[in-house]
Length: 532
Image 1 (tube, rainbow, N blue to C red):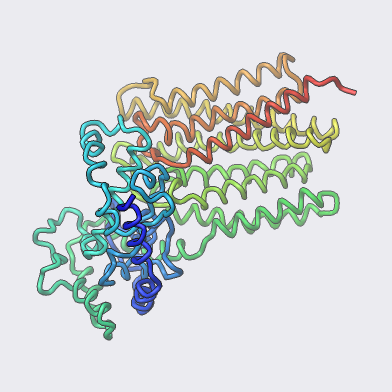
Image 2: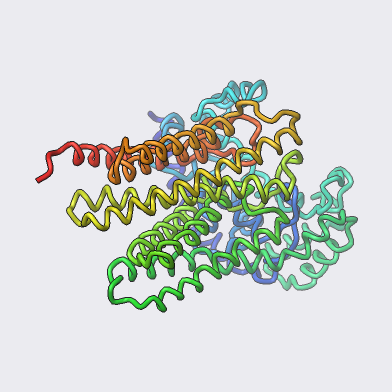
């Protein structure tokens, strides 16, 4: 109890306004705009310093910036601030861990605080278990490992070593003889940081730093990546996807609530957010040189684009503007979710593992599989429209038939694409791993989802279910897609498909699944109730 009170008192003292203000004053003097496209090496690729700063701060603090500072100001400010280890910037995200550390009231801690707590004692057995077999770690143990890496990252940033390492553009170059070794007498990075810390004129130091980067013996692949750093800065600062989501949402609302008063010509405004959406994906492809589906973030952006493209079917073929509006709102929500959880859905563009670096197979197998999810997502959105609308008596029989017809067509399209994608995946597996099928979790759940939707199509074709049953079944079947798409990557995190593995978001996903099951239950009750 005394230790807890002491630590709480210490944390309040460390987070004092004077300390924070001193940090802000020093950080605000850093010329962030001059350094945004400075090439650095991290995660196996060259990226701009802006991207490194955002990613480092996100992992450390839970946000891409700190106290309203430019990300580079916050990142380098943490490096040059003399009392950096006393700033409460380490975001311990698991409440159980915070409770065990004795401070459940706070979420952010300083490195000094964490080192005073029994962190190391608690981490030792978990680290031993992680070294023996990381797959045996339970979720809370993974969160402990995350805290360990956060403290390690903070310490590296504070010492300047993280910055020095990133400036070594050749990953094969040994730091033992590296030009950016801290004690190296002519270390241009150290001279630059000293100039920042002193608040002196640092234009010469910036030029010397940039010259030293150009003089390095850089692999040809990395030279190509250096030429894309300005483009990546433009992408990061443009927020194409956020603007696209906003316009999708507004246009969707117009079509839903003013369908009868809206001319079909107005719908051509969809080309504006569609262009922004496509531009974002294109830029990601140019930067990474791979299809834009190398992680969960990329697949969700791709799926949302598929939802918009497939939504043109009810608009152009059936003139169903209100249904199209619902789908545009759904696409906006998918993009909004994608951009709102960067700790779970990482927007980073780090390269794939070697065995999966095949543009041909990524562009055929993975794009085909994930675009099938867009068709199934439309069926789910339409099904939920029925489930919600029927509870409030908002749907006529004619509208229910229109919803069921579109759902049937979207499931047919999704099954076709998913089946083709599974076959292409088997061919790629035979090429890469020497076997067509191995009951890998990703393979198995993709097959289960495909069979689930096939069963739904057959039940409707044979007359076992009618329009309402198809709409309810479409929402229920999407839970299979959730497992194949999210569950395997984030819950099971096992198998050979390591390009998508991550963690987090379990609470939000569980809430979605429970909400979906609740709507299905209410829909089934509505179906069983006697009709008047």
